[in-house]
Image (cartoon, rainbow, N blue to C red; front, side, top):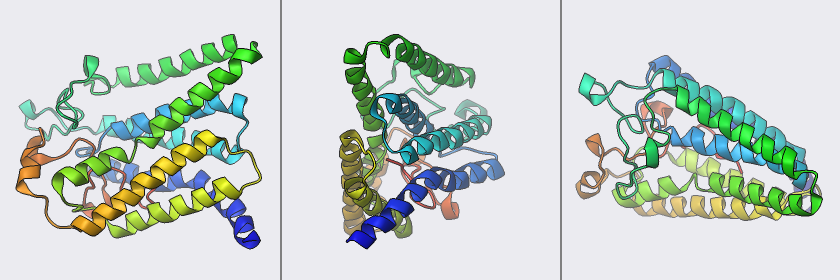
Amino acid sequence: MTFLATLASYAAPIFLILSPILSYTDQAVAMHRARSSAGFSLDIPLIMLVASIFRIFYYPGAKFDQALLIQSFCNIFIQLILLKIALDHRPPPSSKGGDAALPFAGAQDGFGGFQRPYNFWQWRSPKPYWQFLLSLFISLTILELLIAPFQSFYSGYSALIGYIGLSVEATLPIPQLVANSRSKSCKGFRFSVLASWLVGDAMKMFWFFTSTSAIPWSFKLCGIFQAGCDFLIGVQYLMYGDQQPTMKAQQGWPYPSGKPHLTGSFNSGRQTPTGRGTPLGEKTI
């Protein structure tokens, strides 16, 4: 047990730091080579960028393990590149004969036809995306400078933004679960990717609960939630396999060709329902 804990203390931080770049680089290169981001959901960089930015501002108050902080910076770096490529190579609107892959084509997402206020994160112009991210960073910076001097209040504020950021990140597996459930299929979802997720979750959980460095409970709780979601996806894979989606499930999607909202893995020319099908199955903690 001591040997495993020692091994995890070295291997897990390295894996966590490198996994964002190793995983999403393949996605970025594939879109750049194809010169198209059709089928890729911008909700992926949205979730990861917001979560990572919040995590960085969580660090001064929590002083958690530096590997997790470095991972946040790596995540922001690769997700900004991914977002830029996706915006540069997005398909034209359907009115012009393009693929019109969501989220570019409409204001509806994949959950009950819910319409996002002001078409949030579905804008046609690239400028609002960068404005939103810059505004979020500036707002958190101002709050940090204003609240930090008041230590009695700052500890609660720091914990709040930590839980917000990690909770946002923990929602990443949910669209995959919903898509699999609706289609009654895991078609295009490779077992090797699922296995890498489960192995990564096991390594992460073991490190969280055996590490001698500071790992706040917010990381542990959100990590447990993500691991639970990945386990349920594994159950879905055993139940549905890679059979073709049912016609009824396809017709239930408000998208062309029954394509769900969060799509987009370019692995082996196939797409997974959420775009999480990266080579290492990276989803970060």
